[in-house]
Image (cartoon, one colour):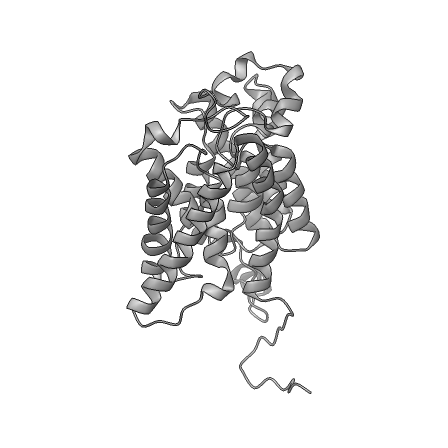
Length: 313
């Protein structure tokens, strides 16, 4: 029988979940979207994903070995980073560029800051932005559904003014140009619901984010359904903005972060030079998360606020 005696300092909170189990559920939630990307864009989607995941795991192993740290690859966090990074790439992206992105995500953003739990931003988001800046032409060479040899196609956000209700099914199923993880909104939604149902993530942040985008779309005279189902919004809302390390932990903080994400995303989509704003919105949210945490954290038990003390006197 395991010894249940806890001799560490409070709080004494235990859970059957581990980092490996949580990351494993995230991987499972991403499988439907991976299958959809293979169906839509061809077998190269699977190869690109495998290369990116393998590169992330290798860089984490190699860096930890080089620095004589404990190798944490069994926690599956590098696998999740590899999957999310691959889902932010078009199927036509050369493999060596994917490896560059994996290096940026794992070595520069994650390990140089201390490893899992110490990174200041979501590694996959930063790597995606770096690739978009450094290899803009390749990162925007979106294939149409039907394989990587099909003609390049603009994403729905680039031609959103031309879309109507007849294209909602196309947006939902993902048979259009885009990166691997922003096309089939249906499978991403299924994965997000699974994460909420298994309590891997809280629904507060993603629901607030999506609701803010919908409301602002109406205010800007844009089709809210097109805005919700297009681009990386679904993937960002359920899988990237909810990262444990770089997102607020309190419900109030999650609410504020969701509204902030929705406002920034729609401002970029409406007034910016680019069609998409999810990646930059999440990066900005990561940077202000410490300030959100400080201003929304729960008061310490037994501590009386100054205002209450003044009132008592």
